[in-house]
Image 1 (cartoon, rainbow, N blue to C red):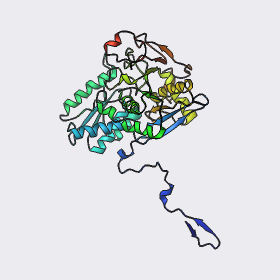
Image 2 (image 1 turned 45 degrees about the vertical axis):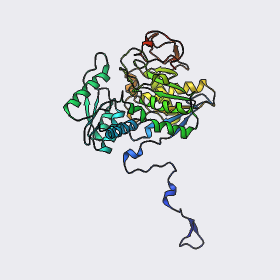
Image 3 (image 1 turned 90 degrees about the vertical axis):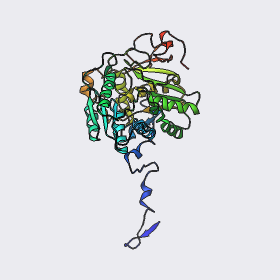
Image 4 (image 1 turned 45 degrees about the horizontal axis):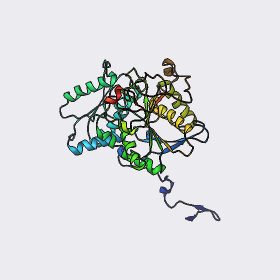
Length: 384
């Protein structure tokens, strides 16, 4: 469309409508919950990866609170539909932070008060955000002698539930709605990438690994699923040890972990995750915290050791903002001896998760449920 201005001999082009300036993917929503989902994927290549190799990262940090906005909203909706969560009832859950943000969002959306039970290792930024978004924050003061901070938090959840009759706990570790919430994410990946050969996912409660991998296997039966855990975590059969990293790993055994879906597992140590997260930020202008660093390290190796046409999808659960005082803080990292530890180009390998306790990046292609009878003896090959 062309319009004539008040100046003779001069014309200017005017847009048909202001909306044409919006990118096709720009989202509009009447509620914050409407902004959850449809997150972008980013190609991560050279110089973070070897030249000619790379992987696609699903940037779940683009959700209002991170990846766990998805299960928080889904679990609350499902509980309301079943009548398990009554109108106005309190929601109470144990979390290291990210699910707490999702539950605060779900509470605001559906008009429920929210109590988040956490521990002293939570970042001050996260506590501030939870409080700002209306959640009550309860901090336990001592770890459980066997189950660590996670079990101590779960014990405290029971106390809060007893103090508020009619309140409800999502139980993210064992609630199948947690995994079901990730079907839309899997379908987004399918639409964005068309074909996926390898999926790289961190494992904590087991929800997003089970939910995404289960759906993608329906479309790609030969999909290679690679789980990423932290050293000191019990999920895949290692002994429980003190853990610095949060957001992945566990001191208990979540029943949402779908062991038969995994082809292999990698354990990553905190200094290795820090190196990857910082290098990723410096070279690709996209990063995150512990989980993102660990996943990126493993995806980088997979990209370097498979054919360039192999399509690798890695799920980045959140962004870097939460970790300004930890992963991206030099004083914190120096105090915990996290700097200057460039990982080797290849992981160590063990044949069985019970073979020995791992303390650095290690790969195992035998994946079994540590609570199953098969965990008592070494096995060859994979679980599926």
